[in-house]
Length: 294
Ligand code: HEM
Image 1 (cartoon, rainbow, N blue to C red):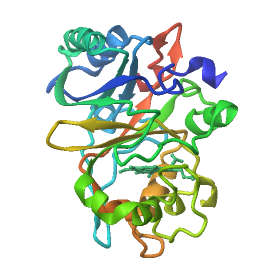
Image 2 (cartoon, rainbow, N blue to C red):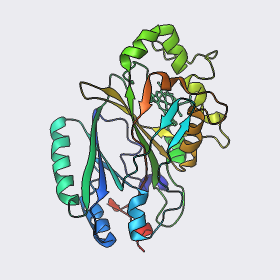
Image 3 (tube, rainbow, N blue to C red):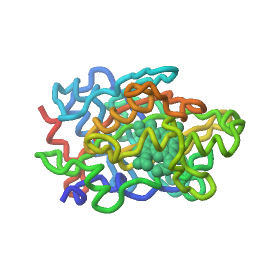
């Protein structure tokens, strides 16, 4: 049931290319007008739409479980928040298609929203991070992915999802300087074979994030993709969950809030943006926004 109501882009495989567009609300816009804009703009063939807490505050409504992305800091690791009102993901197989879709979206949304930030990402090889490590291996699949990513019940909520989004900036030269053995130990997997390294240190990324080690387990459907501006590069982390508590718990453990051990990722990468969004369900291919109507 939940799967049939979800925005199809949530559980779809990684596209060749993707664009993230972040919008703030245009001051003075009526919330009914914003919701109308969203309904008219959305195209299930290419888009995933996510609504941020600032938009709900304008309409004096709430979505159970949605909040603004919290800033975090641990020993030497800082996680900023750049929470915005609307997150739009455009999947595409060509730059031309993404250009055309973006043009339509900007025209359809401009009455209520102003574009704040854009990030173009791409699938690298078979789905690797730019460090060369395969990303997404331990993603749940099939019914497990549905259970991890989608809200199972609730009027206007069934089939919706929550997404955590962060832009990470890598120091790839710094990472290369660590060499293969240390690099593998920092991730906790072998770059060449993708085998997990059982004896990796507790700071290894996959030790910090082992989903079944959380109580309750913190399974999530990650759909992260790399980006490269020519000057800087990194990863756009995107994870769909049925509860943001899972991301909160994991990010907390990554920055060392549990035991003082910081994820080794922070030795070569840092997040520079962070947002939480609620991805509404669909009815007849249209966004079902009744949960947002006051
Ligand atoms: C620079 C940013 C990041 C990079 C390059 C990165 C890369 C990777 C890689 C290479 C793996 C191993 C293969 C796999 O199972 O996917 C992995 C696993 C994983 N990562 Fe990340 N990741 C990043 C950030 C994050 C963040 C912010 C979270 C959540 C807060 C996260 C959650 C996970 C989870 C849940 C796993 C699977 C762990 C398991 O159950 O074995 N990652 N990541």
